[in-house]
Length: 129
Image (cartoon, rainbow, N blue to C red):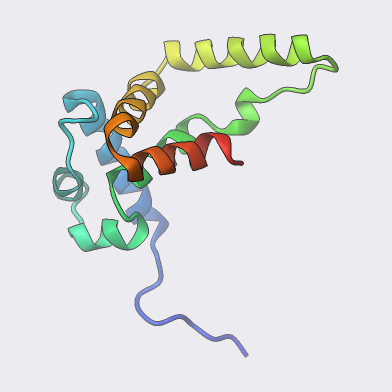
């Protein structure tokens, strides 16, 4: 027997629309100049749609960062610690050089300096896994 959770099923299209809108706004306005309300408007969804998936902007930004910088593309096993670090740094520089990942990460780091919740999200998303 398959039990369905209450409410409408989550749409992958909605998540992609939110990610696309957020990425565009983060690039245009910067992290600090982007609000959840603006992301919702640009994605064509209600704020509650975003808040049901992500409790706040920092959660959304961390998930967005992870979607554009997948760990499996950054982490390597070359057989040596030195080789692994060189490969990881090279992959990160390539990624930051060709896309929006660097400004997005910079925004997350900046917000985590003055916001305890953002700091916890940042630490959990990037260091506790």
